[in-house]
Image (tube, rainbow, N blue to C red; front, side, top):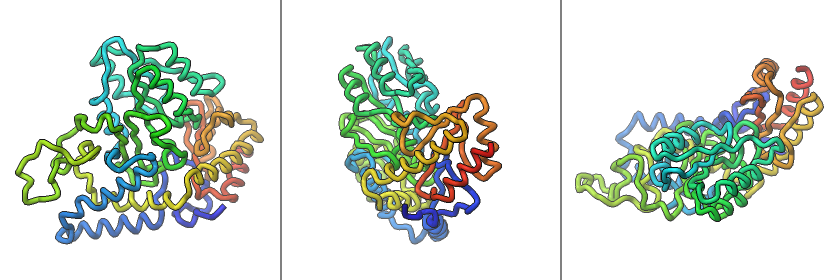
Length: 377
């Protein structure tokens, strides 16, 4: 494997297996962030066109990871923001059901709870399957609900265990049921290949500070063509038609910018964060389709071998993703994670699972470091 560790400021004595928590910025991104801060000390050099050019470049780069067109991508600050847009634009009637997964990340739960309460609908939770096959469990629940199902709000990779869902199979079942599909791909996009063509989702929200190599408070929302005339979460000036001409801003427009731009967050031009985000996406873009997944699958496989030698139970290889490896350790998860931290291995405990989330900076030294530490524990 090519050594990408040099791109990051990770101490040699730290084995950082926590990309699912937060991915560090590269050295280059840090330099770009510093340049952006200096630029904002001289706002007289910020041109009107600059409010649009870099955000459009970021939109175009991000669209490639969705297998989508730029016009279908909105710039949002968080998954909760994006899902609030989805909530506003999906159909749901009293007595219908919204499908979620047990122990799903809360940003993909709370909006649906509110919507269900407001419409007298029901939240149906798919319980964690004993055989670790989420896809089969989801398909079974869809079949049981039949025409009661209105919305399925799920991830591609479960955030705590790393177990992966076959979105193509689920997407087919959702459409056959006449329901709508909303995805949170924060723990997969950028590391695991995806295309909206595989499952035809209505909305897809992603926070960029994990696998998309972006800074905190940036993210994306894919909006299917059928929702492009929807209602945005806020009414900001820059989303309106003709906003490029600052002289005419008080010639108020009812029309919006093309495509999903009507859903963009206000102040999307964010001169501090957009340059850093664009460079992170460019860092990912150097890899061929599926290359990162293949590399990370080798890394998580090696970590799984070390965990098994230490008597721990990793997620089943048939169902786990390439980028996140869950170790099922029981009630001692937090204690074991803390001891690993003391030994220079950064991981996260989620429930009764230890979550290992390597990225391309992990090298042979890191693998040996983890193996030694887990054996000592």
